[in-house]
Image (cartoon, rainbow, N blue to C red; front, side, top):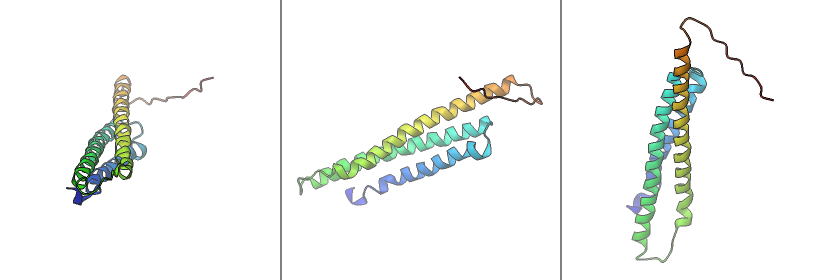
Amino acid sequence: PPSAGIFIGQIPAVIAGIFGIIATSIPLCCGKSQPGAYLACGILCCLAFVLHLASGVLAIMWYVDAQNALSEYVEYNFFWAVWPVIAGDFVCVVLTFLLTIFAFQASTALNKQAQTVPTGQTVIVEAKAQP
C-alpha cells in the first residue's frame, strides 16, 4: 500500500549494495589471480542484480499504487519525486549485470589459463606497453 512508503521497497537495494561491496572486495583483497574469487564475485553480483531489479520494480509498483490512491483526492503527479529512485535502481541493474558478466568471464579466463600451465611451475606474466 502507499502508506508503506517507497522506502520499504528499497530494502532489497540496500541488501544488493552490501552484496556488491562484498563481491567486488573478494577479488581485490583475497585472490587477484584465483578463478574462485571471481566466481564468488560473479555469484554475489548476480544476487545483487536480482535484488536491484526487484527494488526497481517495487518502486514502480509503489508509484502506480500511490498515484491511483491519490488520484481520487488530488490532481497532482508526484513522479518528479520518485523518478530519481527508479532511475538509480535501474542504473544499478545495468552496472551489476555488466559486473556479473565480467566476473564470470574473468573466472573462465583464469580457469583456462590455469589448465594450460602445468602444476608446480611458476609463471611470470609481463605486461608490454603498446606504442
